[in-house]
Amino acid sequence: MAEFVEIYEVGPRDGLQNEKRLIPTKEKLALIEKLVACGFRRIEATSFVSPRWVPQMADAAEVMAGVPRRAGLSYAALVPNLKGYEAAKAAGAGEVAIFVSASEGFSRANLNASIAESLERLKPVAEAALANGVRLRGYVSVVTDCPFEGKVAPEQVAKVASQLDALGCDEISLGETLGRAGPEAVAAMLDAVLQRLPASKLAGHFHDTGGLALLNIDVALQAGLRVFDASIGGLGGCPYAPGAAGNVATEAVAAHLAGLGFETGLDIDALAAAAQFARTLRSPS
Ligand code: HMG
Ligand code: MG
Image (tube, rainbow, N blue to C red; front, top):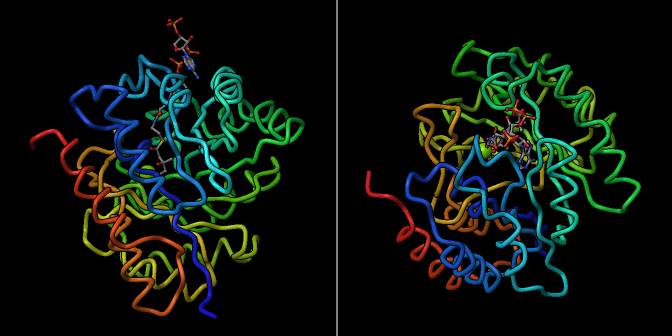
């Protein structure tokens, strides 16, 4: 039997958070419905962040209230603090994702806090998630390049990833936020992280600005990673990473993995339909 690789769908959150047009909740739910038909185990549906910072995600509770619930499918929500956690839990999130940066400049831009302050702020979130049986995912952003500080040292990424692990994260997603890194930089970063954490705890999160995301996924597969974040139709960007393109497109990752002989459990026709719909949500550039 083919080996399973999970694609963790982030389109409704990472994909849509940066869209200029305020997308009505019902359009977000229509996208999620099409994603459900694809057969994902996990979909990151929204984020419970400050609406002053990310207005597009202000309808997080309405989105979570409207998602179709299915056995074997869990919805995740991104949260920056305890307020976000409480709201995500009340809305029925099965998993919450906390996020820290590997560089101080990006941490300040994304969270208005230093790395140490954001880890401190996330400690009670992690404790609550563990106490409540809510699965906890941790993201490290800017794992190779930072828009404010340039190259990020692999050892710094390893340090932050192990700090998230110490908080009790079940999985740590390594975010190449700018989508500019090539395979060598990704390999060096993974080498450093793997000195401290097993591949089974890690996910790869690649944006595709430079068109190298699939090559980077290959490097991560060779390093033993078996979970990859992707966004349907390649939706996305990051509000605090000017110029960054969307996440690598889910349908491209699924086709790539199938070509390599991996099983993703996803329905190719449903992915194509969801991707086509996702592209209609995009603001004209
Ligand atoms: P702040 O302004 O320093 O904090 O923001 P604050 O505590 O002063 O809060 C400001 C206002 O937001 C207050 O409202 C709070 O109540 C409210 P006011 O009194 O002014 O009316 N507030 C909230 N409202 C709803 N839900 C909440 C919440 N928290 C505070 N959870 C803060 C600090 C962390 C809140 C802010 O910086 C923030 O929300 N940041 C989130 C930014 C974000 O979502 N970035 C994109 C996601 S990360 C990403 O895309 C990278 C990733 O994909 C991986 C990768 O690619 O690298 C994950
Ligand atoms: Mg991202």
